[in-house]
Image (cartoon, rainbow, N blue to C red; front, side, top):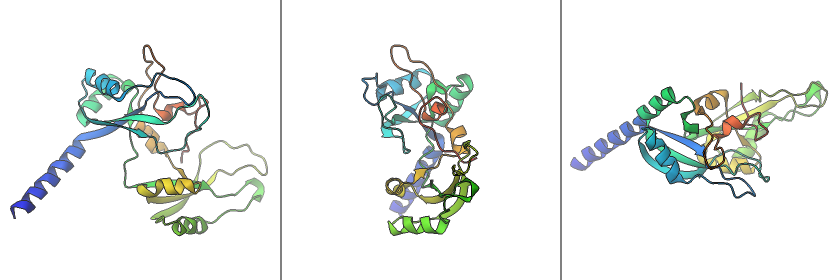
Length: 228
């Protein structure tokens, strides 16, 4: 009985702590083929502490979506910090750019992945049905929890044979993301997700500008797929 009660109390405390914290991130500044001034995890922790944000824990991780791998582009390595939610909200009010940090929105148990459905303008190309791509995922041991049609929200040239921008979108477990990416699927990042990521891009003294990846859209860096 005592052990059961202790377990329940620990569960309640853990849930309360999870609600009280939020994970934020920033690219660490490392660049392919360049000896860039990488921002150490400890420096990121100190930066937030100096701004009055309590850091509960910190770790390094790679952003879970595809980036170009050519020289001069970000490696995708990021500093992740679990901070007190109240401190974070206060920082966002006093410093709209949030020191260049954004919310890490990739910890949900499920994610959405997509692939273009093969349709082209003027009825050229051949649309691949949702069910066929779903079967490909299932054949590779990936459970498909939901599926739908989507649109990439990008501007496509109006000419016969050009892409329609139509997508096949699937909800899968996060643990299966890497396997789906090996099959050519990409992580779908929606408008809602990019607005939640937020953050700003401060210029660091004595080092390169560290940027939260969504702010690189339209600046010649990696475009992020969006579903409007």
